[in-house]
Image (cartoon, rainbow, N blue to C red; front, side, top):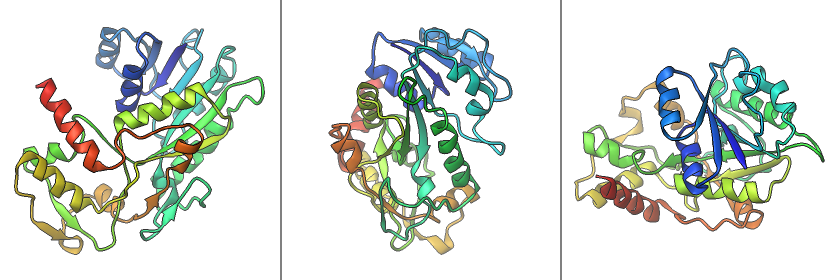
Length: 288
């Protein structure tokens, strides 16, 4: 197996930890990121979203994981590298990391993979188009199987409510009826591995845990784990937020994850944040 990751970020690194010994290549945007990848034993290839990869970058690649976000002109990987990907003779699996934001706002209602896509803003609309672009690279019977993974809010060691609580920037913004879905980084890696083992061309999967929850409840639980008083509640109407943060509060939905369990056989290690956050804290304490 030879995996090539377009955008070697948090999720790709988690999958690599789960698949020790697998040959790995990845894109780098800067000289610094190239050095970091090479120090990890990963073959690094320059990619800036404006030009194709070097001609032999995909030689021998069997699996592609893509997490580069779309821009105003579409998905940069498909735009620049579609022909290279189609010409990759041994390619068996493509996984594109999308977002549950493609469903838009459901006012706290449920969505599954069959739900109509109603992206609320430009970022969501770009993701919908990017999914279509990647599905267009399907190879049919003899080519690669393309899968779309719609990720909920990602958390894990170094990337959780603990960070903001420790630096004093955490807030408990309360918007009645607001719920978010989440997913621990290790469970993302488990879903990706399961898909690699049993690919389905055109497969679309929601990747989230079992409990969408109000964000202020998660902050309060994280504070309790740290032995801290939670920050005071702030009504949504009174909260100062960046446009990006405010856009997240413009969407409220519960996301079903039945398909990753029924089709891929995944058993979530962290079915809710109440199991996931203690594990994050323990991992961070071990690394100190």
